[in-house]
Length: 264
Image (cartoon, rainbow, N blue to C red; front, side, top):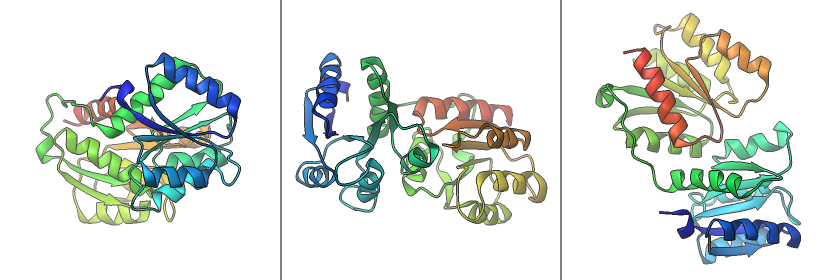
């Protein structure tokens, strides 16, 4: 699939903003665009014709973009649709739920066509997993644990791992469940979120390094956390690599290659 083939539902109440974004769509050769001005209209439009991706403003007349994506994720008919946020909001408390929902991208305002193209390329990654080989690594024997309270994030990560031939994958929805699985199984790699209930990523990492039977287990932290003190603490605890949410498949594959090569 190419960018020009994407079908997009743009959810934007501002006529001025719609015109600006439409111009950028035109620059990228994107033609299949529907528009909604409220969250309820967007949901109705999705039920009538499913888009490849919903691109939404954060503040809508009847709900927020956060409300919209969570309505989508709670609906069996809509949960697989990719979601992208466009917003000038910078507060973590407002953006983190969007990241945790498995959004393919968060595009800050102002942006240009090149920024939009980068974000839409992440959508293509979500829709069609790119081919990538992990060199000199026997992926068929690898045992991987994914720890994330977002089912969408777990599903996306599993799909990327399976695309490179990793089949032995277990999942945990928080650090406590992840720690229990580490006590029961041998793993070659843990991919963990940071912000989770019960036991967060920092606490899980400390458990692995200090109290588990696998203290040298590689841990890749995939997180929306932006607090530099917390990230520094994770690095001091011995994380193997840190990747931001939302992420591209290329970034994940590069970190997998780096992390697994260092342990083989």
